[in-house]
Length: 612
Image (cartoon, rainbow, N blue to C red; front, side):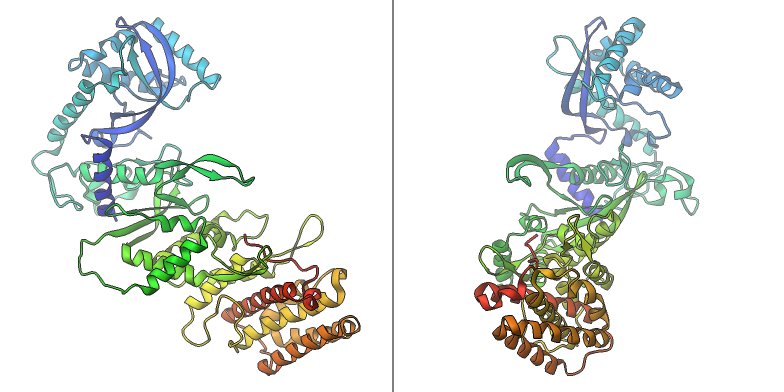
């Protein structure tokens, strides 16, 4: 995993023109303009992405508990000594000392030394900065640097400054490396230093992590060390490889493009979309990339599946001749699932597969998810493919805060989608609980808890965990499926329809609200009561719609004969079969109700499952 991140980071650095390990890109939020004599002129807010000194490579410890200034570009604590306090004063002192140290190499920074030698000018700059911060004209926690009046660029942008930073760094690194330098466990070379490195660098925008960033690999305290090894000796990675993987992972976590998307009101708006990252809940994210440049449009379908494009992919994979590549250098797809744990990163999952496997597995994923639902506009059954977000939220109770459950489910489903693996059965337990948990709206109406996404997820889990003991569940009503649990689900949907046909809008607590949980787990006792209730409803229906009553009675009788004897208890997989039998029969009822007026009463006042 680290090796692949290192290789990716090399490409990022080449494309970004980071020409030395001593440099990295940072957003500059403000600059202090001074004259050649060091007189303060003004402070300006800006938003530039510039190369600055990378302290991670030049020191053996991080900045959390240590004072390590960057040359010419740092936060307000270092540059101006604010907010006031002992640490801020020490930070500012070290910052000025570093500038004076480099003044022997660079004449460009002499005006900055003159500025710091004049307490009055510094005080004016501090007051101006505080005023602009209070008025929210600039970011008080951002990076500040310097500009000489009438110069075309900031001091830190000058080529002479950057080359001097690189030269001094490499001279110091040669001294630090010494004569004994073990080989790096990643690149297998000893060209760069591997000893006495505690912190490799911070990864930004890690979910549930620190705002300043989190460490991917770090041995900054004795608690993380073992076998009497110190710091980086516990995992020998050279400074160059550390630089590469940090740059690569930061790119994956933060890079985004501006896209025009449609908001909830149907209006187009600009939005920044991550290019190599997807969030799987509030505390988990997944980043992905390929060894060689590759179009990964299929991953966009995880957010918003396009039925036409999905169908084309499934067909193309089905018709393609599978060729197992013997070329070990074939292009590959990589994915890391991670979370923030205070100041560190927890790796939840690592995926490494070929592009061929990637495409095949995504095609199988959507094929296994496919479910048919009744579309109100076209009045016919249509294919539905849920997004990854819809699937993970299908395990969450409505109007509840269960971010941990959502992220946990999403992580497993992402893994199942890309590796073509079986989803864990505990997800089926969770989604079935959500279905049987009755809920009502503020108006007192029953909320439909059996959504298309939940039906799709049930089908996926049962089919992928099917060891051949029962028929595979299909996208729509399967008349050939004689599994007792599936037939019981279909029968339950018919009984519910009969009640709706007989009572119409006068139903307070319907069959589903009262009996679904019992019927799906203990059919024998539940259906005993249901059949008696159904006879009363059929008797009433015969007085109003005799033809419909006869047809429904015949269908119920046929299903009961196929079931023969109601099971006393259903296990977890059978409960899922029951639920999907119910869903399929219900969608079929909607279809024939719209095609034949005789069946309209069957679904009267019954909510239709919407395409979420």
